[in-house]
Image (cartoon, rainbow, N blue to C red; front, top):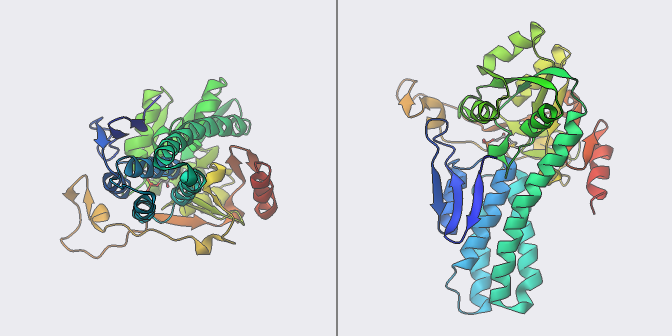
Length: 347
Ligand code: MRU
């Protein structure tokens, strides 16, 4: 299995996804500021992977903190959590992970600094293994929706690289393949960061799952030609009514899927649900650096200084979503009720 992120005695080790598929380089991050910068600059990306990186960054910051008493450790913990939380605004898994670490800190506080340090490391590594298990469960639920043969379009990368392993949307595809189904994947290239062309294609090739890369503007054509049977994407945040924030371009794919009668599925763990938000209009959308659009792999493709917009995510209204596949089961419309039920069944 592809190793996206790992806790080691020397620090947090991550595969640098900015360089894939040209180079496969693992880097070791030795303090929480470096981990925060790795999240911000997309060394690691994808909602569940960002959550695990956030937790490990916090555990690392506290492990190496020079605090000599509990009061010092408290203020260092506050600062570390706010630095990590300020990295990327859309994926709710980041904030979910920070909250989980805060809970552990407060539970262990009365036992002293050594106990806090050990518990935070344990919690972050538990999140890592829980994420892989959640993805495998999601895969099992999701693959029941897929027939013996299917051509599936996906957008961005919701695979092993976007999680602690196995993937969400690609986890469903992997589980279908493991169940003996004949799956062919169409990967949108996903401008501007090219997660589809660089990352999804790379990891599916490694697993010998047939994949055809198309540019984002080809999706409608292939659907209209009857060449796509299903769309499966991941999510960064899902509101209480089932509106889904995911990589920019997902909304267009969902509208095209509806127009062409292609079922549109979202695969995401319950840690991606944000039931505090009534609908998707409240989800903060990250605006990233204009140079990501002006350049491809460092090479300028626009006139110098061209004005550019670069929202990293969009929101797909739930009326375009046929099913939300989670690690606790499959939710369907009305999502208000079905999502709430899934969350409460784990409490
Ligand atoms: O900007 P990114 O690469 O972090 O965006 C990733 C996505 O939009 C994924 O589809 C989403 O996080 C789900 S990953 C399992």
